[in-house]
Amino acid sequence: MEVIIQKDAATAIDLTARLICDAVQEKKDSVLGLATGRTMENLYANIVKRYENDEVSFSRCATFNLDEYVGLEPDNKQSYRYYMNDLLFNKINIDLEETFLPNGVAADLAKSCQQYEEKIIDKGGIDIQLLGIGNTGHIGFNEPLSSLASRTREKALAPITLEQNGPLFGDLEEMPKRALTMGVGTILDAKKIILLATGKTKASILAKAVEGPITSMISASALQLHPNCVIICDEDAAEEL
Ligand code: GLP
Figure 1 (cartoon, helix red, strand yellow):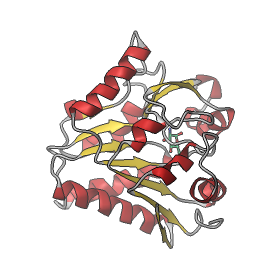
Figure 2 (cartoon, protein in one colour):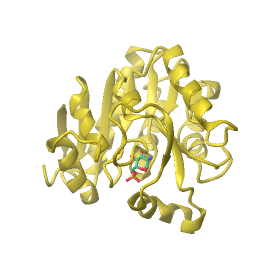
Figure 3 (cartoon, helix red, strand yellow):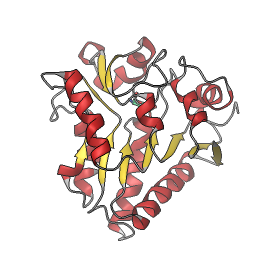
């Protein structure tokens, strides 16, 4: 595991965007694993800027998102499909048909999760998986006690996650209590992983994930097992390393 500490969030984000865009330029049909959350908003803005400056083309890329809330239609503003279309897909030259998210409104959620896994394999596997980290140490929505071998499945959200993401919904009652998420095992199958963490609120959980024991209580600690994983953080998030 390589840890790269940048002086502030803007430089950490810029470096992450550059690594992703360089990789896409080198392998035009890259399969990208994408993440959501507040940390990623500025990252996607940075990637869009690079696209507008003709630094990168996504016309042959496919993408798979980590997770989606159960029960939210794609046109619901709180859904991760809406987030991705709004912040990235509608602003770059990617074929929307090649952008995939778990289907939180499928009639058979278990079956659609299995199909999601198959789709990733069909596309040749994920070249670069982008990750954030939640306050429970989750990657995707792999809350504490997720098996390190888990695959895409339905997961109940932990109280801390409801607290962390609830404000985005305005009314906490509106926030789904369950989500579909790639498993820790699915994530570890990616050829390369980049985890981006910025801000003081991530300092304690990042130190546990990077330097603590590998444990299913902190899903991100499983990244220590990955042969090609980079953690990019700012000085605030690195404070307890
Ligand atoms: C959500 C997502 C995670 C993300 C986390 C961090 O819980 N499911 O993939 O890493 O948010 O969010 P933020 O960047 O807002 O701190």
